[in-house]
Image (tube, rainbow, N blue to C red; front, side, top):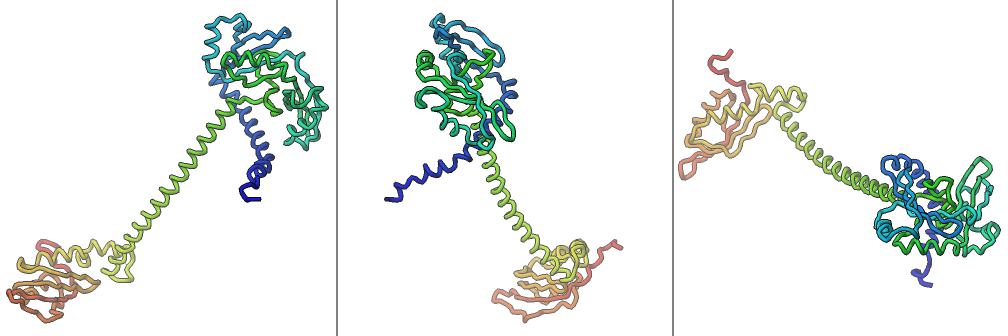
Length: 359
């Protein structure tokens, strides 16, 4: 046998049956909880066909809790039939007379709460006088305690509803539920015989809840993914900024000493005696126009200048006048063919001179 011929997916789907039943029960409970609230603000529009003992169909429009009797289906005009077919209905139901439906009350063990449908399907031959493949049946839970579950079971032969169902579908409508007639006309079906044994539930409303839940889940997943991406981008940006800030801090600490505290670094940047920016400004002002620098290195206590000048020897006195001390050439001065001197000067950073009028 080939691997492709092994029915893995059907077996896996069957293995998930208990989980699917639990999910269906939870969903039905949630739908039953929110349906009254939603119905209050968004009334449902149901079309109800009542089958009487003579086989005639009566038509009722149910909007929220308001019930309108449209009369017998056979007496409706063509315009009324067209209006019914063109309208949007939350549900189209066929209510059967009680005498046409077989109804039983059952007690099942509470341990079989998740397996009620298979249990009833296995007992169909004992519950009804008809063949299981020729009936429509349904049930609902009416009571439940720690030991037993009370169930109301109902069934009807398929041929008993085939005629009315054909008439309804001839109008262009799709039957969404059929079952025993409730006590009040505007009440929804308590047992849906067309559900294949599953308790009656508001199919369209349930589908809308599923769509809303799916949309909310997809939106939440997209929002989560976007948040993760944005978080990673912000984190990367934060690391870049932190790295740049660390470089700046190391540079400032190198200017004022390795052991300096952050407060001392900030204070040094604002103090004339230790500020590197003020020192650069003083050197720039003191250098003559015929001199320019190629390199400028400022350490914690020294400064190094490399450049060219028309008169390199005159620079020593000018730099001393700017507040530098121990100003000296660290390499021999070389004169180029065009008469320009190349120099390399080092000096100690001294106190800034007090400007005239200063204290």
